Length: 406
Image 1 (cartoon, rainbow, N blue to C red):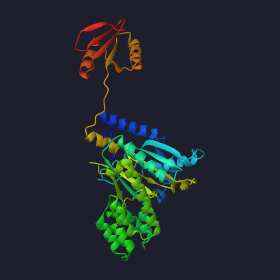
Image 2 (image 1 turned 90 degrees about the horizontal axis):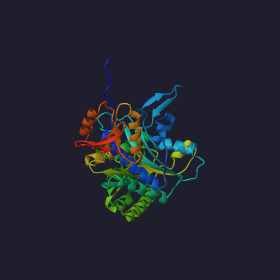
Image 3 (image 1 turned 90 degrees about the vertical axis):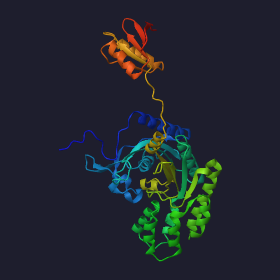
Image 4 (image 1 turned 120 degrees about the vertical axis):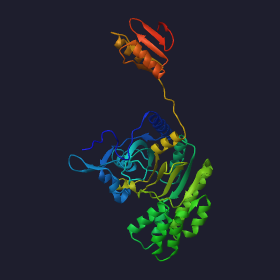
């Protein structure tokens, strides 16, 4: 039987050295922004009961979840999404806390993606959830926080703004079943114009069908609102469009006009979004590096209805982008290599601990001889070797032995 003990499962990979450093830099920058905005960190389990991610409300298909059972035979999944577990957490352990709740997280999600999509099955995300807050102020705060967080990592991105309800308001005017409505959503999400035409050609050619046909093309600047206004077909859709326009104008005043786009065909994969939705794209990165939106109905699933909005940053995508741009964080090398002579090993460890406590960077030699220690220091380009015996001596690698160290 073939052994798979030298490779990782498909859709996963090891993180090495500099890549780990970039991950740490990115997550630290994101956390600093979130905490400066008053958000507090939470961590949910890597495994949850499958009921948390009920496909009817999560929009996450069961076939993309990694599933197993616990010792009682109950179905559990590896966390495929962070928002729903945090909604569960808010409705249980945090139910008596003052609202709104400002929570942030940095954790991995797991989804089984189809072959050849180029996506990872294991993705590190960092994001925020603003729970118990409705209205324009909350929407603006979430979007402004998203922009600030992404700007801390990379300044070169564009933000796309849409409304989840706009598609639903137009789709409600079509004589189609829920399955057909989902097919429409998928074709619009992928901007597959040919498939969209095929689906719509079989329907009576009403103004709503004409509006749906135009929906994925309603993308651009502020002119999109004027183009979309005649297509609304209902007061509900018109009200959503006007609200989105007001958000757009506010964000322009915040200085985002040069990288802010409107996309009325922005229909997120997760079905729990109810209002404004937004995403961010960076140059040379095919998938969105940030996704977010308002989900006012989700907490009701956990018997604690309240409005909410949030977003997540794909940390892996940002790290890959920075690495391709040549970003290289400082990898601190040891300044000192400490060698304990025979019988003075513990003394050497204590000396190294003292150096570290004073802010120094050092390694303790694991070699048996001074000669091996010095050769290793030269290979690693560690400038100083400290020899700890009855006395403590410093050796400049490549130079002469110094006197006793203090």
